[in-house]
Image 1 (cartoon, one colour):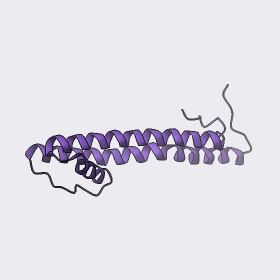
Image 2: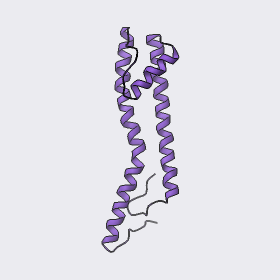
Image 3: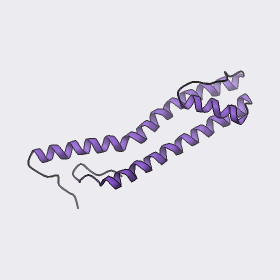
Image 4: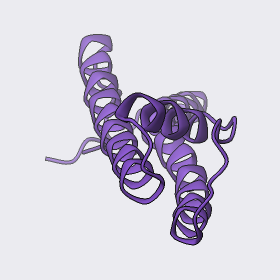
Length: 124
């Protein structure tokens, strides 16, 4: 998926395509996670779909729930979903940030090779 350090940087156009693919994956993870939270709040706390959306979105956004859970099952779900939402945040940040970090590190490696008087070798 990523070019090896011995390979040249991909073009700007290809890089933006890579960013778009990673962005689409991140959106997919968020949509799945939002649906999971909505279903849980609707099932365990009997919230309307709109209120379930609000609670799930607030947890995924790092703000916390709007409606505090009232049932034991709802409290267990809310606690588990809060932990899950924290991991989703880290995962989405990694998915979106990885192409950027890779390009920066790859560019530094290419610059270092040029300073030594050699060009990076390409594998066939």
